Image (cartoon, rainbow, N blue to C red; front, side, top):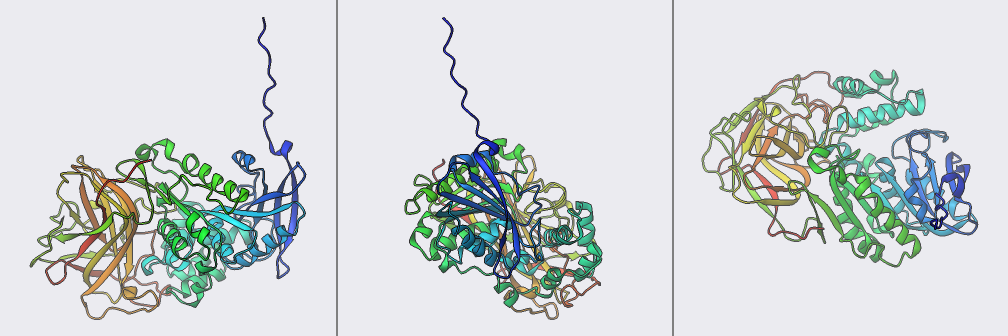
Length: 570
């Protein structure tokens, strides 16, 4: 007897399930933004997922992912002003809160709208969600910013140094795409731009004309009113967020600090309670090191479904926790290669532990005698090196969004440089887990009126492989405040606090801790010319003699967020 045939399940497609409407939505100042609306063919009122982006309409303004079909929502994709087919002039970050608010107001007036809307997007499209959420639109029930900042000054000028390669390359390519019909600057050309001096003229080198936003960024290297215009008022946010970040994304700090701000300061108790954060072993563009962390740990495999369920649940009932079985924080423990959960960040059982720098005055390179241990120093010889901005330490991995391989890379070849001080612990007799912010307290002097100090935490395997975990920088003129510039005087010895960002790592038994200290990380950050001149105006560079102290009176040390006991794994 022949088997009974069953009708194949009809596969949902954009053509079969949606009508595509194209609209130019008017903003409060008359500018009209190009918008694609994917409206379900089924009549009635629908929830909305809104994504706004400044990127090319053909690469980002596309049909929604098929996984979104189950949400049975209207999908709206909009080009930011001055980009794609939208009117207006593109100036990064300006107008975005107003434009998102105006777009939501327009949606609220449509007969097909249910009254519940969520925001979606990554990077720039993630950042603009924060400003929109702070406007507290009644229709907004949740948002999902991924790989995105909120405090723009801290992310453009971390430690007071310009995140050069990212913002020069991104800024110039965006200007070209919006104004010159040139959609991409190759990475080799971006490097050439980063080498251009003075910095303020990078726009002329790239485009042949002055770019207003680039000039504004260079004119404002300290935290001031220019950057304050983009600040987020956390107390006005009434909708919860599902925040996604990566340990090797430059915006890693932002993801965790935004999470903490939401849990502590959001203006609605449900917004505080329902907010979640997921941090994986990712760079800004995804998984760069599958050979280390496994192909199954991509953001698409781990984060996409969680973020969609978060939006689905809130659109169904915004008064109910959409992810009741998910802890507030889910993070990937590097080294252990396992997912962990926590109720807070840093985890409740995290405590700071100091690892002191030691040497007999010759910590230069991995071949030197730099040591790292728990014993405070006594009388010890200081370490010196020469910082030559004409031959800066090249960026090798980390939160570098640019040409070449980024993420978690072997640093052992780089550590042979004599202008890098290397301090390494003895092999560990048992596993050591850390989770939280890593910092370095450094006592140092320089022959220059201004210079930079860089620090990098490294996990060294028994075979000598040295993998970077996190890093940071401090510009000397901003050593006391990011609002006030103070040049150095006559080789004065100063205390510097270097924020090396957040991480989570299990240093396995037999591995060693390592701290690298240098004075450049180029082209990720701009080279400090050691002149003390006005930022961005200088085309001259000088060498500088740098001294690092680690004695009883000036105990330079690494601060690690050590976990006192194991946490439950997923």
